[in-house]
Length: 393
View (cartoon, rainbow, N blue to C red):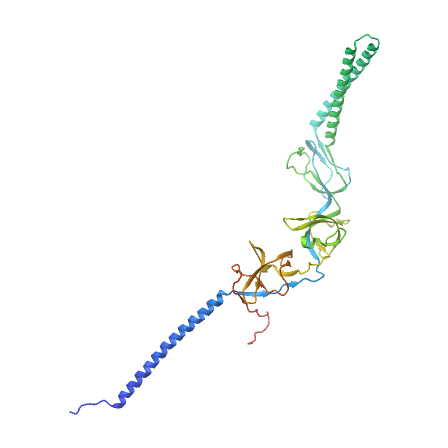
């Protein structure tokens, strides 16, 4: 039989298939290597991006010329006196209540003090005895002085009678002083108003036992003169140079929206409190309609201007730590720079910076807690305005 010889065309086809399979395998390997390299590159890029926190940058704003200075103030009565008992006893009657207007010397309450009454009666009896002994000693001394002039008695005996008169007179004076003391104590059973004003508190009831000089005891009444009101305000040191006696300020109270009261600055402490860095000042305002109430909170507006170089920032931009108050600035190289600043007036949502910043500085708002000087940061893209259509739409 003849030998079988493979055809040349079949062999060529097998080679082509092998070459194609090899190329496909190489392509798959290359694609896998490229995909892995690309993923690693994306991961590295993402990791590097995440290491740079995204921050929002703002610029400090200058203050308007007519902003003025608005500070919290505390209202107090022009005069206020707590009325305590000066003698022990029981409340027999109270004649006034909160809100009543009283005049100077008006009786507020009457106490029963039986012990004081008995002590006064005994002291008056002792005074009568002392005066009787004084009169007897006076007549005896006069008689012995007459006998001495006739040489009927010795000078020693006459001097003894005169000394006894002086001793009896001193005893009578002491008894009279004791009667006066107890009489004054008995007078304290009538509690009176020291000046004209309004009763702003009452803490007594009929039959209540009151003790004089008891530590921590509450006053039976409080009398306040509210015809004028004192307003106490703490002014920051930066503005204290513009404060002077005689200047006017406006008061606003939450219970009177839209109404403004006028007050005049009457005195200043003239010293800066080292704990708060403020100067205490006092203003006074007329209160004819009794609209201003002692103990109230008010906003006091002074016609002042901000200090030169003062700018305003959101309170969220401040960093408060061991190094004091600082802000984070965005440097030209894209790195964070921490800078110390001086805070002036605190307006709640915003604060005034009196030193350390200018309107040209780029301030990082709400900086991360972990942000350090020299850290690389990136500016976050601005959020699209609400209601504005997307560019693709």
